[in-house]
Image (cartoon, rainbow, N blue to C red):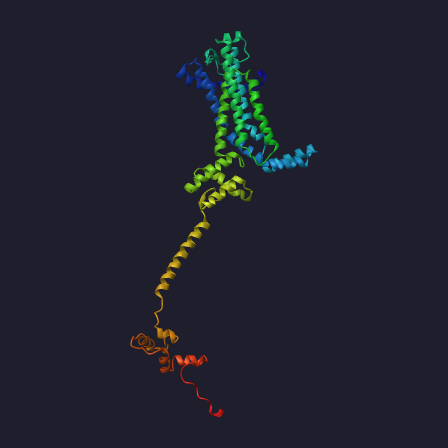
Length: 429
């Protein structure tokens, strides 16, 4: 480990300088020689490093998502060229190149953090052996050797002898209890982080070797931390525990707000998003718009949860747009407009029908086939006469007295039931 740490000695001076600057701040609050001042300086160093690594973490997420998307294609290549390893590797590299993915991108945060980790180890190891390193001079070295975190010196290890621990002003029991608790917490946080990734943020619709690999790492990493942790100084354990807690919180945030498509986390996220969209009719944040935009762009390739979201939004009378926004459905707006126009036209037609009702005819007019169409004022005169209550003659008598009206129409139709008969032709006599 000393050999590996010495390879990263070029970054030892910057790391020690950052620790000293934080120590000045916390030393003014808690005291220069206290474990709080030195411990919080290490925690602050972790936070500063992880903030600087956020862009790499975002790139890691995108690379991991891209790798998960390529799993079905990778499985096909493995099955097609299972007897030809060289051709299989060539096809894999071709697939990575075409999709623009890199398998090493998911390891970027860990690789970028490794130099800081080994530089910190080198600094704390120098404190344990009583050597000045970087910008840590003799007064700072003496102050760091006096610092204790819950009774354990900053530079003590679980495997240190009783004499060495005593030279640092502590007991072996205190050192081993504190280091054991920190190792357990460090392994547990690593296990929980990997477990929530596997149980909540993995596409369960695709069963690939990648999932089996992640499941194996869920148990391997905690064991590795436990084995190597007994050789880490207390200060390094503080560093590693802090970075594990940060990773766990960061992972929880990503799972809650940007889940993997097809995972249980996506189902829960889209359920929450559906409730908000149906209640308020809009999308709140930019990240939500990006997810809705990706769902719309998939088209028929949407998974079960995404189709359920689109259907729920449609039932609410809304439509997800290509830019990630949610607007009122055009079909529903047209249907509402058509319904309103139909209702308005029906009401207008009813009013017109009521206004254009014909006048009620008398009994004599109905029997004679309707009012006379003589033209001018004859029609109105006929109606006035037919409506006269003094006209008590039967309808047949009236038709007989007026051969020009009803009798003519019946003669034309060939019916001669009433009225005078036509005389026979003289030629027939």
